[in-house]
Image 1 (spheres, protein in one colour):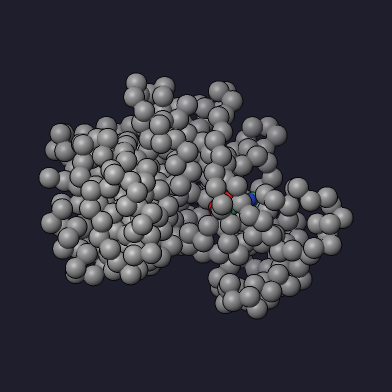
Image 2 (cartoon, helix red, strand yellow; image 1 turned 30 degrees about the horizontal axis):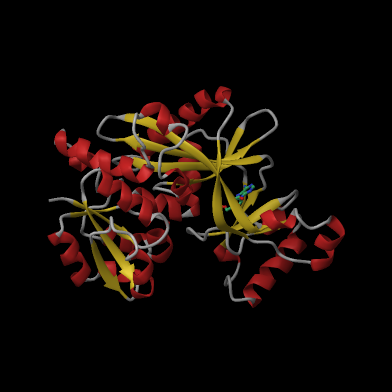
Length: 341
Ligand code: AMP
């Protein structure tokens, strides 16, 4: 009997609860230090204890997952803790397209896919000496905003980069990708593309609450200047958002363009959950500075369904549950190879 497995972090609870609701056995690869936490949840059927998530690459883990006929649901923790080569070497089936995860982790490939999708993206700045207005310097991979910083000139950039090197957060310029800062209201658009039904579903929107940047607004300007802090963008949590209904048509067409571009660049394309991350400006135009090619933690908000999933399903449909539903649909239609790699 097929089971759904994931790593114990990020959105594991939602994914496994959804899998259980769909009648699957659930398996958690869990670091020993978190065993007590995850044991609290009765919908987790089997726990594979490890010292580090990297053990998922080892024979022992692979064998247990194989015995359980597990499909692994990848999430941000897998990406942040393993290289693309390692992820691609996993023998057990992975939900979605594991090859596209490399396009998420590598900034250059990421930019290429976004441009191919014809999404409005902020300009990247290849060299710090080309910094003219406000820019954001970002680390590679799923760093979760930690160690990101804003700069307005080359000297400002150099000063902050050197401070991060001193703190041991980065090694140097090669760890950073510089992009124009996009002004507006942030929105993280959550989609699901069904490979089995060949259909795009818009699942929800969230905003991230990021420290230190979101806390700074609580301090008056003179004190902000006095503390001389390099604020990071480290995600602490997410809050829900609904969009003006007039924006929805564009939301779908951006998602469709992304799916079409992914089909051209990285077979079998963007299947399963993904997220387009960006800001809306004062004209309601979206600029996208990122994508995630797998489930995002912002979907944890909607364990009982979102305002958008409720319009499509007459039952509580979380993203985790939708993933499990897709496995069921694909099995019924005998097209499982379309939804796992
Ligand atoms: P990311 O890792 O790219 O998702 O970025 C983490 C956070 O940095 C985002 O949630 C935004 O708050 C911020 N951010 C990243 N890129 C930009 C940008 N080009 N313009 C404005 N804010 C950005």
